[in-house]
Amino acid sequence: LYNVKENISKQTSLDVNYFNPFTNIEVDKKVDLDYLNQNMYLFNVAVGLALRKAGDK
Image (cartoon, rainbow, N blue to C red; front, side):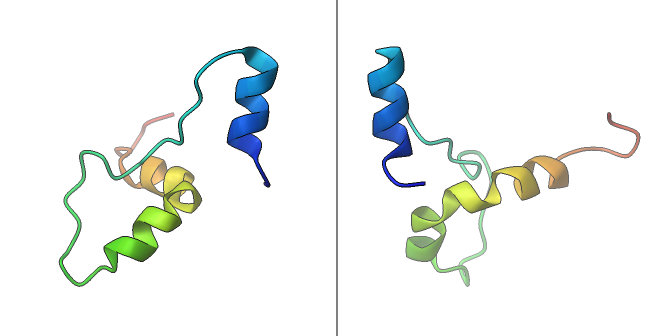
């Protein structure tokens, strides 16, 4: 979504930041961190689901 951050900020008069799902997660050294940082928004749902425990709703 082009300029979504800027558009939401403008419409709400609030500071808007992208959520980094890897903030407190150790990432293997084999992972390309540049790619991960450029595309972190693609992993929000996957990381959230991966952190759930059996039986969570």
